Image 1: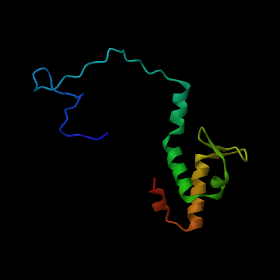
Image 2 (image 1 turned 90 degrees about the vertical axis):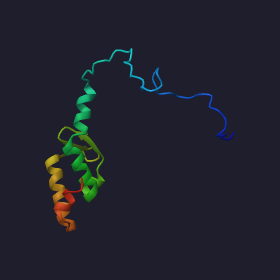
Image 3 (image 1 turned 60 degrees about the horizontal axis):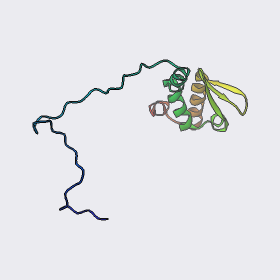
Length: 116
């Protein structure tokens, strides 16, 4: 099958209104809008995408401290839980882990923290 520019299209779309000049007006959907109800997943979603969590996990993956890289981390309120060692890593402990790793690698903390 090939494209023939001289052949008229069987289907075409028009955006003009009834007088061929004015664009068509948008129509409201006949389906009523459903209100958003809070669910148990909404709170979990907000918790998992919170700003400290995303920024810290980004920095942890950037500097790759040994404790973080060896863990199997699940997200919990105010931090992470390592299922391999059954330990909890709070946001504050993660910040300290990042600071220690930056010092260990001899990196500029301002540049590392500016990354995310």
